[in-house]
Image (cartoon, rainbow, N blue to C red; front, side, top):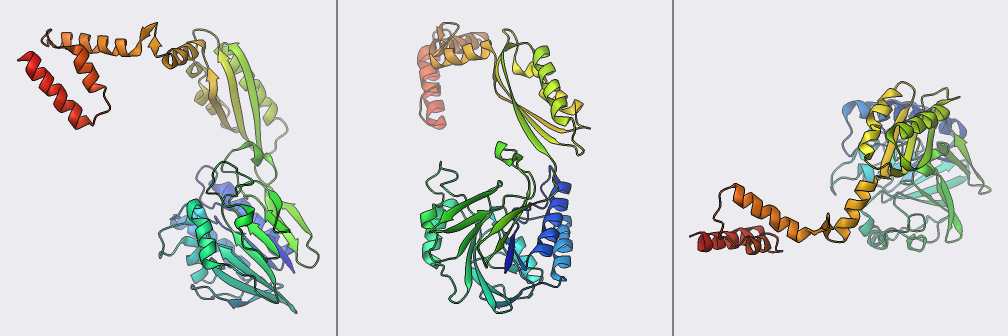
Length: 402
């Protein structure tokens, strides 16, 4: 049996809403023509509570898919939603669709409408001829709860079938910065293949000696460097374990880094324009461009002088341009940061500067000059609660000021 894996459609993604719809539609239509069944491992929608017009987009897509003459059909289902279709379109909710426990999320609504089968914490079995394939799904949940949840429900492969475990989580081996992320070793054993969403770039790996396949998203949302690859879906063949990635038409996404040293705004603007023109050249579709500017501005200038927003607007008819200046600094800014690290500004200790400012403010307000502004500053800058600090300051003012 040929199984298509199409993930992270993000219908309703506001920045590229039309792309999300057209590319999801393209991917699912192509997948349905190449495979006997389709798996969707989460994030059909971009929001927990999609707008009615976004739900309408999903209904239009899945209604047409459900009418197709599929090579396989659903013959078994253990989910609490109930089986309302035999079309082998099997999905789980992702992290973007997660809502309070006990509430019906948007994917469950599509399942209740008979447009797909929500197999979250359930097993769906499909059949083609004499072959049976079972899919156990685990919808996206909070990262700190996923290991405990897997242990609690203890997913098991279905005997006599080609068994698939489908989930939607961050994976530690791919994103090694949070110990709460699920590890390969935490995934249940015994399944013939593992399928995941959530990651927006394409991956394959091995889990318990079996393949883990992640097709990536069908639309650009995160604007990370590893999303410059093609968008599409995976078709897996249960007979021989082979699989291929099928590319869809999607909006080009390109990134570049511009490194500068002591650059004047005019020079930097010129380089950004030149790089943008180069990246636009030859593109038949309006591309998404991200420029990352790093280094230093010339003395006396600040990165605000680059006017990144104005530059993006200049090219708005030709590209979706974003200019990241978070790693761009000026000598003045660097000096200020160093001074703050050293606890001083213009060689005046920060604490002394604060006390001097308070003294001037008290003097300008006509306060009694016998008040100990040093003690008052220490009270107001203490780690005590706001209420306690104000009370202590008031007592000082009453005592010293009469």
